[in-house]
Image 1 (cartoon, helix red, strand yellow):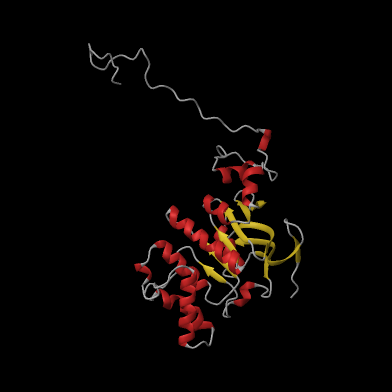
Image 2 (cartoon, helix red, strand yellow):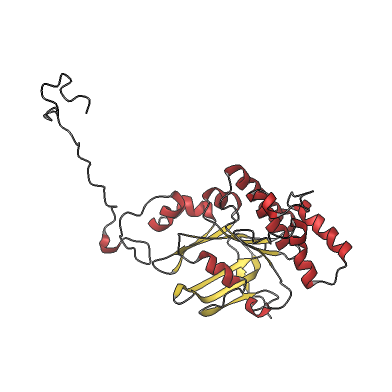
Amino acid sequence: MSIQETISKHGGLEPGLIHARGLSIGYDRPLMEDLDFTIRRGEVFLVLGGSGTGKSTLLKTLFGRLAPIAGNVEVAGVGDPAELRGQRPRFGVSFQSGALFGSLTIAQNVALPLEEWTDLDPATIAGVVEGKLRLVGLDGAGDRLPSELSGGMQKRAGIARALALENDLLFLDEPSAGLDPVTAVELDELLLALNRSLGITLVVVTHELESIYRIGTRAILLDKNTRSIIADGDPRILRDENSDPRVRAFFHREPLGGTRRYTDSGEPEHGDSERPKPAPTQEPFTEAFKPIVKDDPFKGEYL
């Protein structure tokens, strides 16, 4: 299978790792339609958008968990990821909840892919598991159950299991969701280390702005109304330079205002460029307000 070459925004030719062409995703009806994008090797590629835009659905389609409604996904060296079902995984997946088996220890959870897809002996598997736990900062936690770990530690354990088969592509669904700020920063630092030190390509669904700016090298922003990608690029540049009001609303957490609709070019419909202003508030009392109690010595001032 040939790997298409794509022009990098940073200059030069870089091989694409994942290609989405004419991709429509969803269940009973499309959530997104006719998506076209390429994920390059070594990127921390973010999938962004509001609630209900299909971020997690797109992620599941990219790694073959869901079949597309139309179009196709092609992974370099793999082809259609959906055709890998029942075969050794060629990439790791870390789900939002961690998806750890509660009755197994952390070490047993991490060992599962190795036991399922390799012929390694138990001693070698134990050594690999120990190394993966050390990599994610869980030294000595292998004998503990998931319920005995904090939320951040469970996320790390899920990442360790996703890395067990030494794949260089990792999909993560809301990795920092539900974590306190300090733990979220620590998890971001782990992901950056995996990307920069080991060259692992990360495809991440997130809505946490701090994480977006801290780890993302490129992002696409999904729009629910147009069922399309309305922005593609470095998230910091999208935040600072993009003039589309929908993009600015996401990156600056600004309300779009009412139920006004926007054209494909990002302009408000009917040429109205001003956001609706809230109705002025009215004071509930006036100076002429009469005291409730007759001959009230405070003349209603306590109101």
